[in-house]
Image 1: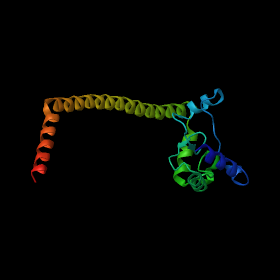
Image 2: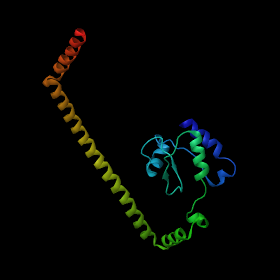
Image 3: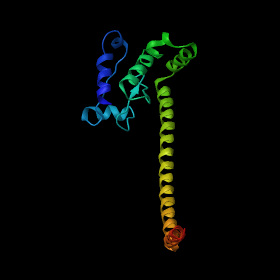
Image 4: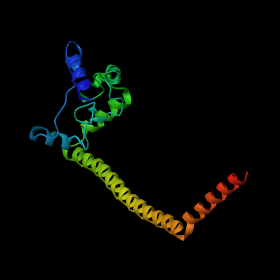
Length: 173
């Protein structure tokens, strides 16, 4: 994917498009990139994020050059935000206005509450995945034990007798 991403960056970040959008990459394993990647919620590599730099979204499309280019042409453009209010519909303009009218500490409290909701959802997910993994491991052991018990109870001998009987019938014909 890296060569295709580098090609997209080179071709995108010039001309008119470069005035309003940017395609870039960050090395999340380097000292310079770790903090930014943690702040942006990068948990695996490679991860593609897009949108408002203050509220990036996860990209989940194709990873080949043509897929990336097609998606970028369709989606990477100025979007509704406090800095681009003219791009917003009336409903978004109203919501932005309401949020801008809040005291800074009230806005911060609302942001923290929403972030806490996300954190709780992630913690619940992680907990349930661990429980599923434990259940899977238990079921796997039980299945392996059941299969072993069936085989140990004479299945192999039964299969041998059956095969020998079939061969005897063939020889009689």
